[in-house]
Figure (cartoon, rainbow, N blue to C red):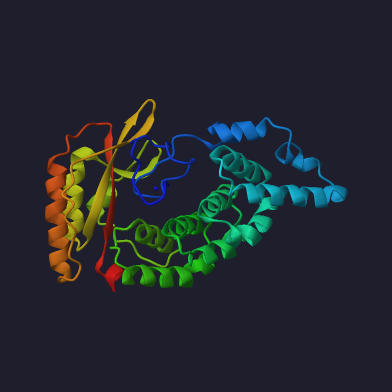
Length: 303
């Protein structure tokens, strides 16, 4: 999953700023856009989102001005006002993408994050150049969210910039388990520029779980960890999710918090990752409604 650079402290999916797909290892969606309170307010107000289809050429200037006003409100100090503006822009759809893309570089961090949400929710690839530019942001979370949005929108021309961004991330003090690194690898994989190694047993055990598209039963977690390690994959971490009638919820588990030494020979990295992950798995009490998402890398991800 998105809420800055830290895990969801509530454990409740969707308790962060806004509804997103599973973009970080921490987040999952719990509500559709139409259920978002700010979205409902926007839909029931007199405004551009209610009458866009009726706008004619004579009203173009007024409409352009309204879009510009909404873009500016993405930076508002009031979260409610910023959320309402974001919902209005989403409801306008593709017609808001180019004006927003032209202005996104002048927004602050929170405004840029809201803009990325608009781009992804609208689903218009015209946002591609702006998202590619945001991969060079000084803010890690902006780079992170941009990579996820690029993957969602299928912006293949972003591949060279994504590769450069990954190299920059590898040169930083953050490890390959950092949120930005995860997002960039995901984007490269989705765009066909990275091959994910998915061993047969691991592939056979994957299953949808609530709002999560790909997860593994908690009862088979140790089998998946061993299967990945046996196929030369280093498991970086796993996250647990409880699926109930009320939604999908993050479920904490015991962690060793011992960072892997990626300067060691690769096979040693794999075995160290196996050992530490299996220790954490030993504390998990399997349940039929408890599932895990996992992040792993291969040797090529460190080259």
